[in-house]
Length: 88
Image (cartoon, rainbow, N blue to C red):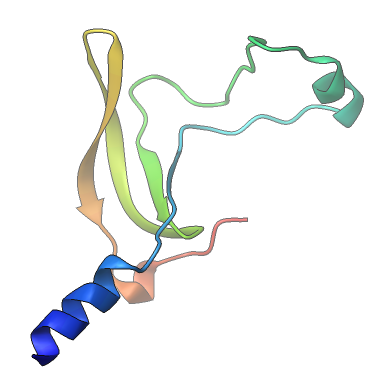
């Protein structure tokens, strides 16, 4: 009976996953002038590793893969708790 309760509890935990592709720095007024579809140039190259975050905490590294017209992230390394950094 306890296994069912644990499973139900774990299924209700929300985790926000995000991937950092690169960074950009620009003045706020330039950002506010941008419209829908605007392109922001990042400081990274296509073949560089990306950071995978769970609830704003880095948990893995990966690489971007293009499959047809879709992007995918392949996990190349998971980080130990001691190696994790908080994203800012």
